Amino acid sequence: MDNKLSRREFLGKCSAYAGGMTIVSSLNVSGFTKNSKAFSSLSKNMGKTRIQVVLAHPSSKEPCWPNIGYDFEGNKAEFMNNLHKYCPDVEFLPVTARRDEDAVKILQSGTPVDSYIVYLSGCLWGNVPEAIAEAGKPTVMIDNLFAGSGEFLTSYARVRRQGLPVAAVSSSDFQDVVQAVQSLDCLKKLSNSTVLVVGGNPDKRIGDVFGTEMRGIDFAEITDAYKKANKISAQKWADQWMKTTAKIIEPTQADIIKSAILYVAMTDLMKKYNAQAITVNCLGGFYGGHMPAYPCLGFMQLNNDGHVGACEADQRSTITMLLMAYLTGRPGFISDPVIDTAKNQIIYAHCVAPTKVFGPDGPSNPFHIRSHSEDRKGACDRSLMPLGEMTTTIEFDAGKKQVIFHQGKTVENVDLDLACRNKLAVEVEGDIYKLLNYWDQWGWHRVTFYGDFKRRIYQIAQLAGFEVVEEA
Image 1: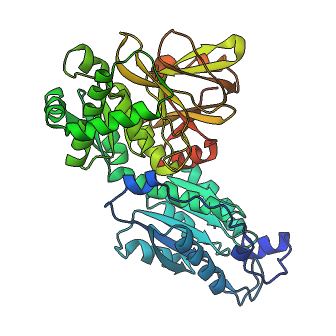
Image 2 (image 1 turned 45 degrees about the vertical axis):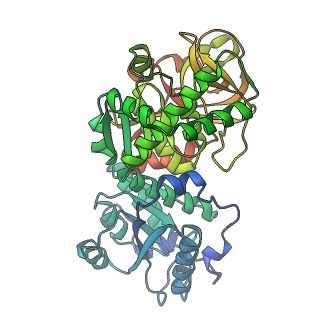
Image 3 (image 1 turned 60 degrees about the vertical axis):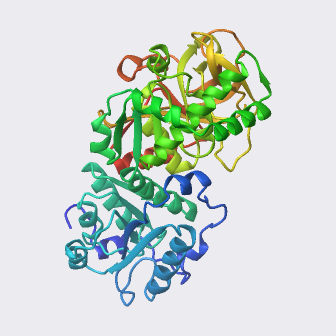
């Protein structure tokens, strides 16, 4: 027990918990996050994530936290029932650990699992949490409040100091447990995913870190898919976009139909390769005459429907969007930001944005169909995104093993005929002058998501072994 209090010392410094209730039953279990269409659609046919749940506690026959005679069996049963109830798409493999030797047996059993949960139903004051974490798989350590707290706090701090991929939940709201499970599930889903990279060289580092297949597609293949695309289906998509837009400004009907044919071609390729995301070197493809249309309207539709369509063969932004789709069910908005220090604003500018920023199950916001800004050709969307909402802006970099992060509140859809068609202004949370400092190291792109996901970003970063860099 290096640097640990003995059980007797611990009990001597703390008063025993007098009640006999089961802690889990007192948790707030309202408002659980449900899997959206995005989550279920992206992960179709992937199989369930397998999580070994290590249920750790001492004998209830001796003085302990929460008290002698505590119903550990009832507590464990209720914890597992809640996991099954609120995370039905995950396979849980429960096993009890009462001593250090049990952790060794668990790790040596050969049971194939993707990750671990260590639930401290009570304090063992041994080495069980550390032994499981040191196996190196993503691990979530969970405290049964007033029962496992002493060992939870010391063990979690110790394994985090070792740099192990471990996150913690110490909360009376079971939704926090559910979100931690979703983080583990997200990492597994990423390892089973395929991203198509059209007109670019696949970044192997993403595959090395997340296990995602990054498959290169040359322009000739997407051109061939365009020629073979179902024109009747494409006409229906073009009609739907023209019917639902608030207004069409520059593009002709022919421009919009070409965009719809390219959308059908992209979805055909995604089906062919069982891909969950596609990113296209759109400027090189269109300027070079390799593609007859921009993919912008198709990307809008993919992102609205819970898949991922990403600009400019930007694979770092693409994996960021895919990770967040699994984690939150919400699409991302890639941008080339502009900073206005006089207004404490960052303006996210690009020629494509989702119109269902809260995910496929959420409301749609109005949009216009415009030409692409730089060359005034083709068709794209200008999404009039909701205002007064907190946003989280990030990039996950597999090479650096870092995620850059800032937040702000949406204040305006800027309407200037300058730069890209979408210009979402956000009032920055933090120091806007600090926000000027990282662009040489990270490039111009960022990806913005509607919602306050700070704690969730930190959690999944810990589980993936990434450092969070707060740039504001």
